[in-house]
Length: 511
Image (cartoon, rainbow, N blue to C red; front, side):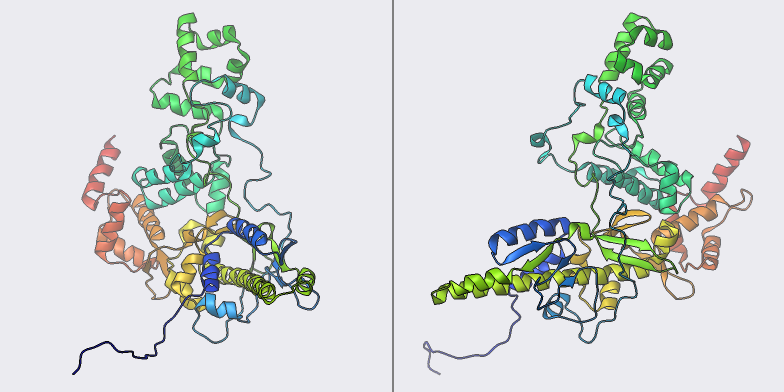
């Protein structure tokens, strides 16, 4: 066999991602607000694109109908086949009615709500301006906040796992963290939070206590007095005199020193020391961190119940601009194109504009498909609360709607759903679980832990439940678990063995 250079022809097949397909995949992972920025850049780069009214994308000319983002249809476009990565065949239409809702309805993003915290009253505003140190009136400047590390919500959520006694309390604490404003204050009351999550007020109080124990001290307070009191307690300076001083912050703001000294029953020296201590506290502890995502979140999807027991699911049209092709301008430009290169450039811009509109249209349809499947699977949560959250995986949703897991993962990233219980990230509805006793469906790990805690809290001190007994009682409730799994969940929520609990309850009875 001779050795030497030679030329061979070979045929091969490979999957190549075109720039258009890469762009369509990128759009799936963007939130509605990020889409606005993307469209602004596209408008600058393509003279044939134009911006219409919010709520739809389409051609904009009378010859071709516009595509309403609020409507879902079973047809599959070329973009659908490329983006969806489906298994072929006809798509099943959505069971959820995408009918319109009142555009003026409160979306739960916090706008229009009464103000709370240190800026809620004139006295509090004066108090905030009188403080020195880190608690300035305006908070950190843009240069201080930029690149300052994690946001307030991220900083607090990183501490929840170690501070919460059980998974349910941790879940409620994370929800409370999501309701905090930039300064770290909580506007919602305990009853409102309990109603939103479908749990007892006592569970909200326990979770709020966990949040208020986190760093920085003072977050989770409902007003300025509570914020300062939490910091005084942490510093071990919350004696009766300091308590009375904190209860009369309006007098501090007015500078009524003589009356304050009488109320606190202290002399000039002690009062000066107390006032210096008071001014060392931070009235807005949350402003040490970045404002996002601790601030208000604009939901991408709106969900409201409708008469007859169904759901009204639609995209938030307030944050969706309408993109159209200006065909009149295209015709005008084409008539003035004298050379072949200019006509080719114009045709390329028209093709890019049409593709972008199709990709945006398919993005909306894909988001609605994924969201509708989430609502179908987690309907118990939306109707009854967090205890009814079911286990769910990306694969389950992907198989149900005929798409790839990676597509579902992109769709659920940076997307928020607003419902009567609040605003939740789509990733919130995914989690592990256990099988049910009847072999149908399942339950989330949080629901199982809540059931174990309920059984142990209700046990008779003279008849402590063993892990085997817990297995049988949980089976009667519909949970199929092994004894080792029950023991693992019991230990995870901080409950001892039957021997330890018998000892503890004996001591409690004697006490």
